[in-house]
Image 1 (cartoon, helix red, strand yellow):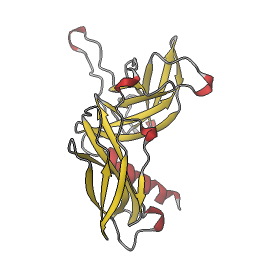
Image 2: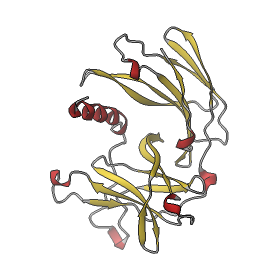
Image 3: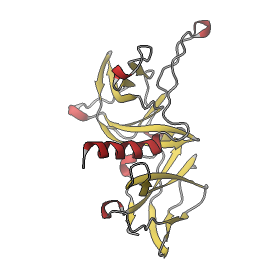
Image 4: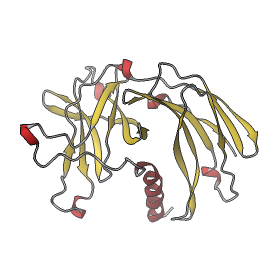
Length: 252
């Protein structure tokens, strides 16, 4: 596929999620803190341990920047590899959820401090007043007990040719949000092709099923025709372990 088309597909797929209301912006540090208060970090973030090696960081996002997460020890920052990440809408605002591996390179000591750094992508395209680097405050990871556990999808049953019913186990631990995740084809009129797209469907507390429509257009290519469903939950600003998500797939 030509690079121009590939870039357009990526831009379309990310834009539909990342540029939803509340996304694509980060709180900028005020020019002059009043009353001697400390400047607000340009990246609003929080962190928690998921297990001994995995850490979750939930942060604001400014699409002009490329982000990384580092463990800070003795004033020295060590960038951590990403295990999995995604955009999640929490309480009506989009956040980027990133899980990183703190044990890479044989590191056995759990980090006590994490930091998010954003570097301006294509800095030559911006005025000199735009910060080239933005950071979060130093983050003390919360214990793994704050990470909620998502229920599993138990079945995806076809109701008719164009409808399926997705069922899942009841959510435990009184989460703030229960989300049915749906990945299916989306037609982009801008570039004139079908692309896979992920939707977040917030469901009512106590619900254990939802009916979903299938995309069955004859023009959908075989490699994007599959529909997938899985569950997420959020509580206290953190999200269930992204690594444990196991989508259930169906063909329309």
